[in-house]
Length: 92
Image 1 (cartoon, rainbow, N blue to C red):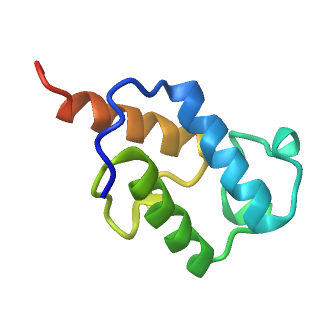
Image 2: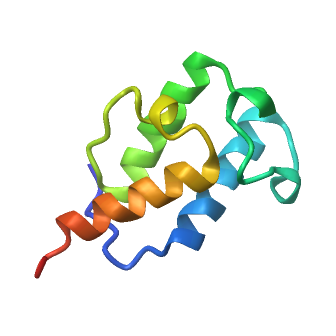
């Protein structure tokens, strides 16, 4: 697993998620509504697992497999990830 991205911002995480989703769903990243649910933009359950796995690799976090279901939009997922990063950052 990658080293924890302690310098990541919520905006960077949202951008990463939109880039990932754009490739996976063949959409333009700028067209992805960051507040829309993953299901409403066409993300199926298998691809949601791939998203979480790729996000783990990118962020250095260990996330539960149901993370995308519990935080079902780019905005919600990014907020959760930044909170996890902050909680695990040294000096906290």
